[in-house]
Amino acid sequence: MHGAQSEYGLWLLAAINAAFFIFFAWSFYKPLTRWDWRGFGMFSAFVVALFAEMYGFPLTLYVLGGWLSANYPQVNWLSHDAGHLLEMWFGWRANPHFGPFHLASFVLIGGGFWLLSAAWPVLYRAQREGRMAREGVYARMRHPQYVAFVLVLTGFLLQWPTLLTLASYPVLVWAYARLARREEKDSLSRFGDEYARYMQEVSAFIPRRRRGPAPSQGETR
Image (cartoon, rainbow, N blue to C red; front, top):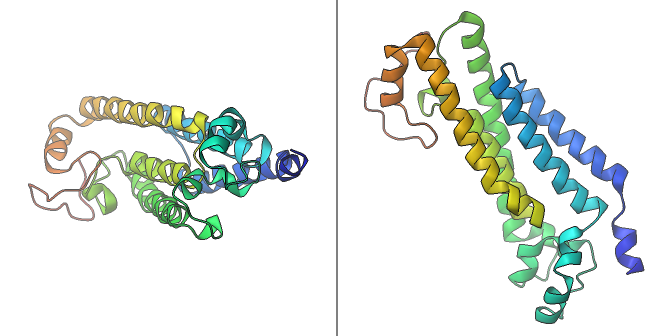
């Protein structure tokens, strides 16, 4: 138990990591509307909960400790590496940072932040010019910013699953989908038939083959 305490209780490290990823996301996203701030706020709460367990107090390992020790006696569940639950469950005995789930998490997190960085300039220009965002990634999906957040959250979940993040993950996905629908209602009221046609041509979250012609770079709603 003493060894476990020495590997956790690092609240300053938890705060630094949470602040880093929140600021990193903000630097790509820069919320403007109330919908932007709600989406970003939910992402930030998830990140804080994640790093609080990763470096602060391993609540999940303590709650599940008895069951985990009984079913996986070969694992030291009080060690920091044991927090990589998926690697432990599937028998990855090497450094968990090089495990398949951890590597997959890097791909998802990196892809999510790339998508945020690609979507934000397009959305920002469109909002400043009072028009629809239809070029760039918005030519393939209507809500790339929410897809990006879900990719990052999924990556974190693969890397370090906890009871709190597992419970909040489906709630966040549902909330992002709801925010997207509210944004669409607002866009329909502002842009009318042009946005309705855009909805027919471009999928909400998963890119598909476009039904209509691809919009030009300078096309507005």
